[in-house]
Amino acid sequence: MSKILVTGGTGYIGSHTVVALQQAGYEVIIVDNLDNSSIGILDQITSVSGIKPEFHELDLGEEQLVKDFIAAHPEITGVIHFAAHKAVGESVSLPLKYYRNNFFSLLNLLTAFAGRDINFVFSSSCTVYGQPDVLPVTEDAPIKKAESPYGNTKQIAEEILTDIAKVNKNYHIISLRYFNPVGAHASALIGELPIGVPQNLVPFITQSAIGKRGAITVYGDDYNTADGSCVRDYIHVVDLAKAHLAALKYQEDGKMASDYEVFNVGTGTGSSVLQVIAAFEKSTGVKLDYKIGARRGGDIEQVWGDVTKVNSELNWKAELDLDEMMRSAWAWENYIKENPIK
Ligand code: NAD
Ligand code: WQD
Image (tube, rainbow, N blue to C red; front, side, top):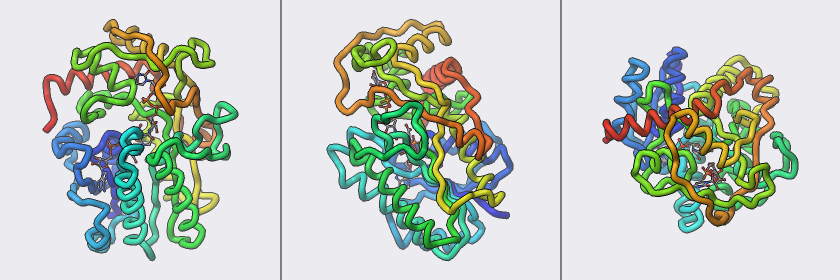
């Protein structure tokens, strides 16, 4: 039986994707070094799907360990590579930490699979576009100079994958450029577990609403947008998880037009910070305490994706709306208050 390797599978997007894979009948192997996730997520995944996933604690930065592990698992036919550091601000202060982890993990995996026929799905990000000149942004828009070492690791990783796919015809590689993943599984048993003060909007909103944080600061209301606050393409994490299955299926069905392809994964619609706050209040009935503050350095004014390509070629479409993103994020915040995950 072939298996799908999910690196970073105990993390936020990884755990939702593991559940989606299991529910679609795939056998899954998770590797994670638990640097940014908890071992307790394995029980949570099991509660949702009814299947305990195979798990190996492994640091993908360790070349020999990765080689030995992959050699010992000839049944792996597909890889979804989530494992990476992802905190934009931290990457500015600790660039080596980001370059080391994000590149070595990727290079060690690619080296270990050399010579094998492999479907590879890489977690990229809309951060590669910076502030696009044309909206919605399409996959062939120019890549802007990265704003952070984190963003740079995604841009360079995409270049590495392009180069490798050209010469290694056994690799079938897809980069998914995620927009802003938010929300949690409908069961409220898995979701995002930010360590420390959340830098991202939605976890800050839910933690503020539950009383773990103070008022939310809206970073600027003087942008050139309809209400002055920044606009993003928020995508429900459960929809995003399903996009990985669509990518795998496309690879398995031999549909790739070239050995490296890129897809935007978003809803195709932008929402402002103030609209997100309003959606949270409306869908949960909980009032938020927020104030308008100064702009946050490095923020993009507005970005949302053109999702024509992913809709037509991967036959995938986002189904869950902003209200559902907020409702599920709130249910998860309440769940972990009562059931902290170890
Ligand atoms: P996450 O931190 O929740 O999950 C990443 C997982 O990878 C964690 O469980 C962590 O312990 C693990 N990991 C990190 N380095 C590792 C290593 N060397 N060896 C083994 N495991 C390692 O992050 P996430 O939000 O689920 O993001 C998953 C991927 O998607 C990342 O590559 C991220 O850059 C990318 N992405 C995330 C977002 C977002 O907003 N969440 C947006 C675009 C792209
Ligand atoms: C969303 C909007 C903020 C917090 C970052 C990374 C990006 C990507 C996803 C991985 C912005 C505003 C936020 C707050 C606020 N990840 N905001 N008050 O900035 O789009 O993207 O995460 O690849 O690389 O840069 O997401 O959730 O931080 O912010 O007003 O307390 O919410 O200014 O407009 P962002 P975010």
